Amino acid sequence: MAQLPAIIPVSLLLSAFVAFLVGTFRRSLVYPITLLGIVTALVAAVIGLIRVLQDGAQHYYFGGWPPPLGIEYVLDHLSGFMAVLVMFIALLSVIYSRRSFLQEVPEKIVPLYSLISLMLAGLTGIILTGDLFNLYVFLEIASLAAYAVMAIGNDKAPVAVIRYIIMGTIGACFYLLGVGFIYFATGSLNMGDVARILPSIYGSRLIVVAVTFIVIGMALKMALFPLHIWLPDVYTYSPSAVIALIAPIMTKVGAYVLIRMLVSVFLPNYLTSVLPVTLIIGWLAAVGIVAMSVMAIAQKDFRRMLAYSSVAQICYVALGIGLANSFGLIGALLHVLNHAFMKCCLFQISGGVRYRTGLWQIPQFAGLGRHMRWTMGAFTVAAISMVGIPPACGFFSKWYLVLGCIDAGNWVFAVVVVASSLLNAVYFFRVLEKVYMVSPNNDSIVTTASDPPGEMLAPMLILASGIIILGVVNAVIVAQILEPVVFSAF
Image (cartoon, rainbow, N blue to C red; front, side, top):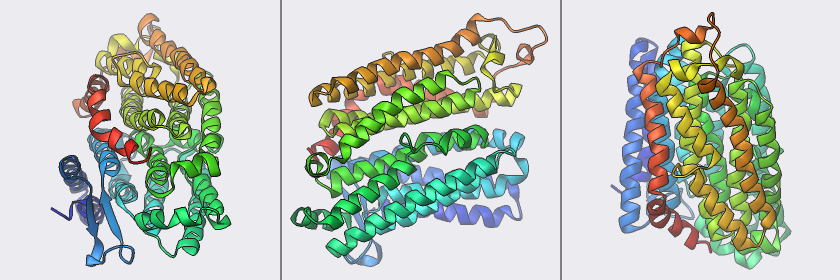
């Protein structure tokens, strides 16, 4: 099974091609073909992660050409963790999506599912590649597919996506320029080979420029404050099932690239002392956590509230990267996992409410807790986790971030993490009060609402259960998967 690292993206690329080809003649087969490709990739990712835990990193050389001449795929603790997470979220999101797409965009199902498979192939390629330029290629594949699927929404979606295209293209160009400077300085694009060469040339201005460009590019891709301006409109106006897939994983893969650069390419000491990139990232993240939480409080549209909340949550991940110590990085990676479950659950709930009621405005949610009991039960679990109440998983990633702040002696960041939980409580408990404590008007559509179909409800409940399970087993995840990643860097 040496081909496991390649099987994951290849199965998704094949699924995208076959789904589009077959869907031209029989639309009903597009969904099962897409599901089969995702299941295949998920199984390969799980088996790969198990092998990594047992035997160490797995390497695959395309065409049998070893690095640095050939393209290398690497399945290690970090990439295995991310691959399993992305594909598991993708599986639940695609199961959830069928009913939602049939209601919102029934005539666009064939291109939607083909593009989703293509986007996932790009994301898993980013995660698994050990080549800096190959990462750029997959970054563009994922981005172009994401632009297309998000533009298939209401009338405002294409306009919102134009801003994303502009910002995303700028980010990709910055990354590519950074990779170009690294190649000029080292003569190599393989991450392992570059990491071996860099320490002897860290004084070069080429490396300073390269690091700066790569960080700016990935900050744009991950929507780090204040480079997030493309995200709220896109998350508000795109199809609900599309955002339930993209919001939990797309920006996290951008954060993954920064973490990969920190642990596998550049020495942490270089990014903290010689060129203090991590300090800048940390302060931007701290400001973003507070500012975006306040913006979330100000929203009446449920989707827009979740969009601003997403920016604040990616800033938690960036804060862990900015701390650049073992606790901070564990907190960042754990929050990537936890937030993927929480935000996927919340956006699926948003889509489920829309499916049954057509409502987006929070003031119209009065009484939903009595009529959509399972849906609102899942929302309650996700909300308390976002606030950071144990045993939900959101508490534990914030706990590690606070430990990282204390270890770094940065009490301002620690106060920000704690205070942000109170801000989260304001906007999530406001919704809980509305759905449980306020009665709807007699003529309100809420009085005739019910939980969405089982095909949509089951993924929500699995995610809500996962939020609690991840909280209970967080120590195992940290010890078995995340600590080896962190100890390899610090």
